[in-house]
Image (tube, rainbow, N blue to C red; front, side, top):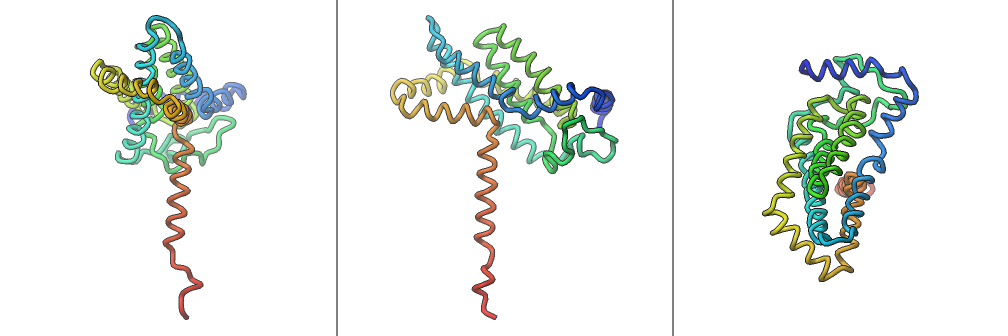
Length: 243
């Protein structure tokens, strides 16, 4: 653990269990999908149906934001898997971390903290919102820093460097996803599907925004269940073994 991570983590942890209301607020914002992805997806849906001369430009940007978010979630998870494992502050045995009130110490145990997939996703979305409105982008960035990233450091889910690196990766994905070449060659073609096959497009769009809002949690659980069923099916059936 470097000096920055140590200083930030231990300083913030000094306030743990001092205020019941503050601790529970931090736990809520760190864990409630509605307060994170739900709000961002609601904002994108609002821009999708916003009327005006730039209606189709808005929709292209919304599609770019969603595509960037999808890539961000995938990138964050892949990097966390392939990079060397890093225990979360909450589980780090070398520091005497005091969990905030309302936290259980075994949550996310076995999951690497680096980089923060939340930071990758929500900094990507914040950058994407800049292309719709600078004021909205600034508000989204502030919301991400103070009500998404900060709580995850405070409750011991991440070190500061997890957030910093994840934020840089996410911002880069957001910028690339909103580049002119992507908007013209990808987002515009996807928007064409909304006009040609709306009966198919909108259910898919709804499911995508729902999954992004919950960071594909139900999809992950479904995959884990399928893997478990497959592993159980591959086990030899003892009742059929001849004795």
